[in-house]
Image 1 (spheres, one colour):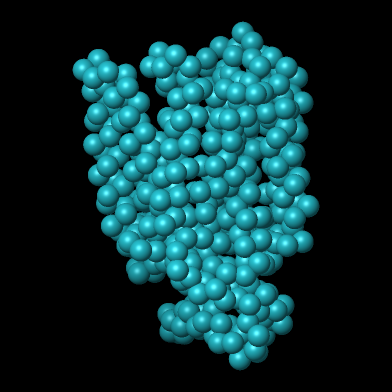
Image 2 (image 1 turned 90 degrees about the vertical axis):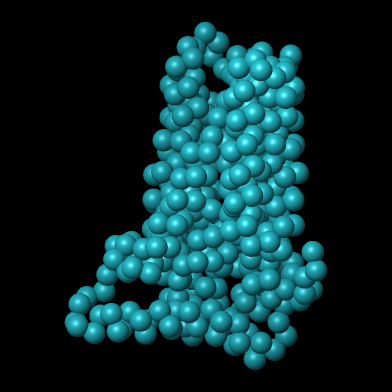
Length: 392
């Protein structure tokens, strides 16, 4: 990647990596339930285990809704800190759980943290990223997530046993605590600071660190870039409210403004496509999916995790070279064809290895478009005041 060196500073790298650790933890918890399933309170029913896995998804929407409020009220950094503490608490409860019912509660707590992460990390990275790196850094959301999935699969080879499964769950808290130790390097979003106070000296100091500027004139030019869209939006709002109507709630206003409503619908469709594509069947139940297809299902799960990481790295390279729409179209078409081959193979018309290859193809196509783009597109498409509620 050819990038202007002045835009890639040490404070920017640290801030991006520390924030991305939340998505790493989310990815880890997506896959952590696969390997230890036979050893966690043996004798549990399939339905009970399904509840433990699905509790993660129950907590997710609550975290996503709350995260928008946290981000606006406490700042991006403050909201990230709250989410880190939730991971620490949820991981401890899960590791020390005396029964599967407590594991279910812990999974719901971790789900809240993960749902919040899906809102906060893309916003944070989008607001910190220089324009020429927005696609690359935005894809870090998905890249960190799939690395977390792969690490969970690899850890399963060592700790998925009757004595080690609690340590697998405890790693969630350990990783979050490590992130907590690094939070002094986690800078507040200058866009959020300037939105609250256009004269903020703290915002200017952070911009200077993030961009590596030497002169105040450079900083002020960057500040104007941050404020430009907000000023334009304020003028539009002033015209819209000239009849004397009171200020509106941003969430309601998004659906009342025709132009913004179209963006909301577009991003909702992308998120629905992301979730309903079927990728979660591979992520959450890969152990059961490969059972009977290959001798050791954990090997298949780990192989998919490795392919996941490689495909996301390719997406990282393509994101700022190809249009978002082009990548979405290729991604959707490739997944569609792969799904057809998977179904035909699992019905006995092709060999099991063809099914495995089709799943790998499916994962690759997901990661080049439909995986990362729905997360990064919101920070690019919406005005500052709409970003947090739109992401929620």
